Amino acid sequence: MAYPSGAAALNGFEKLQPDLAILDIRMPQMDGIELLRRLRQKSEMPVILLTGRLDETDELIGLRIGADDFIRKPFSQRVLIERVRTVLRRVHEAATADDRRAGDNLIQHGELRMNQERHTCTWKGKNVVLTVTEFRLLGVLASRPVSLRAATR
Image (cartoon, rainbow, N blue to C red; front, side, top):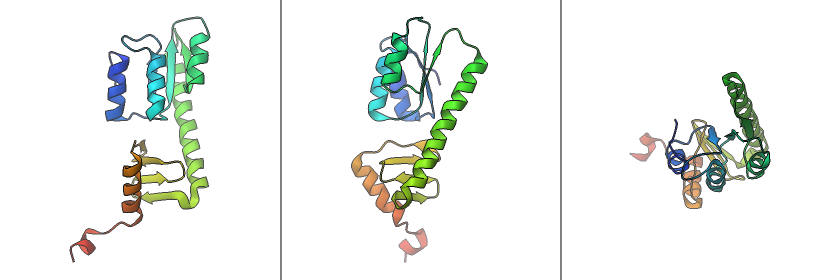
């Protein structure tokens, strides 16, 4: 999904929760660096930054505030696709390793996965942002699932 501005992207990310975001440094209303700052307050979604500038300052700032990769324009589509694959593979491998380390702190029920130690939740492989109260409530419900048949007796 493409968004016309940084503000629109931030709103869209909250609704759609994509697996990865590709942000241009130069965007109207809110630049890519500010969008990344705000995104990092709410999400650990992988982010690749794009820029047409030759100065390395944007790259350094972007990486320091949490960008997962950085690509300078112009670039080939094949390079972009491979970098997306690499970032997603790295994120998937890290999540799998976290789950193995979590042990007793991991709650799984169907497509729901909750890591109580890291306070993370995924549904069908996508991150779900929850308040502390929502996370605790969902954790209780997921760790003690009740079948519909048992609930109606």
